[in-house]
Length: 400
Image (cartoon, rainbow, N blue to C red; front, top):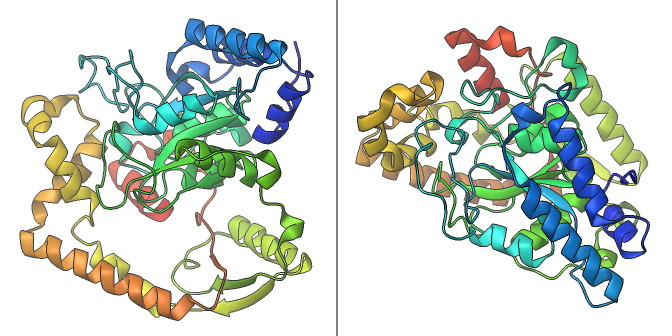
C-alpha cells in the first residue's frame, strides 16, 4: 500500500500524477480506524466504508480515463457528527438524538465537499452538542491526544475526533465547526492547524447549532494550505493548487503581538513555544509590534451570564431538555441551562456590547495585517484528571 504524503495538496498532486490511488488512501484510512491498538473506535462514531470505497474506485476510474476531475478528487476527509450527511443520523455527540431520522440530504457545506471530489470516510466524535473546549464525551468515548497516549491526555474540543482523524493519518483534513475555539483548540493541543472563518460565511444549514451568532464551519489540517483548500471546498469555490498561499510570497507582514489578557496564566511550556514561534516569524521578515487592547479585560463580565451560546442553544434544546434531560452529559446540560439566567434586556445588551467591541478592535488594530496570541494557555491535561466538576469547568474556561 502506498504511503500518503502529509499535506492535502501534496496528496492531491500524488493522485494526479499516478503515485497514489484513491482506493489505497481509503483502505489505509479504514485499516487505521479498525486498528484495535489505535483510537479509531473513539474517533469515529460512524464509518462509511463501502460508500468511500465506491467513491474512491470511481475517482480512480475517471482519472485513468484522463477526464477532467476536481483538484481534490479522491481524497478522504472526516466529517464532524454535527453535519447532515444523506442517510446518516446526525447525533451531535449525544444520546438525545440517537433515534432521530437519518438526514435526507447533505448539509450545503458537505454537498460542496463532494462537488470538490472529497470523500467522507466517516463521522467523527465530538463534545456533546459542541459545548466544550475540552473534548471529553462520556457517551462515545474520548480519543487520546497523540502526543502522550500513555497518559491519555485530552484532544481538545469540541472537534475532538476531527483532530485525531488527521493526526492519526486517517483523513487528509477534518471538517469541524468553531464557535469559540472548537477547531482551533484541538488543533493547538494536537499540533495541527485549525481555522475558523468569519461566522456564517459558509452556510450552517444542515448543522446542529450552538450559537446562531458565532457558529462557523471550519477545518483542521496539517498545514495552512490544507485549511485553505478545505475552506474553498466548503464554500463552493474553485480550487487551483497553484493559488495556495506560500510563506515566501509574503513580504514583511505587520503583525501585532497581543500582550495583555490572553497572555495571563500561560504556562511555561506554552510561553516558550509561543516566543520561539514569534522569533521564527521575525527571522522570516515579519515586522512584530507589541500591542495591548484593554477592552479584552471586559470579556469575563460581558460573558458572565453565558454569552451567546447559552441562550441561543437553549432556544434549540428547550423541548429536548424538557423530555430527555437525563440523557444529556451533565457538564453540557449545565452550560445550556445557563441561558435561563439571561433576560431579553441582557441578551440585547450583549449584542450591542459585541457590536461596540468589534468597532473598537477594528479601530485599535487596523494598522496590522494580523494579530498574534497563544491559542491555549496550557498543554493538554489528562482525561482522568477532569472528572471533577470544578476542575472540568476551570479547565474549559482556560481553554476557551
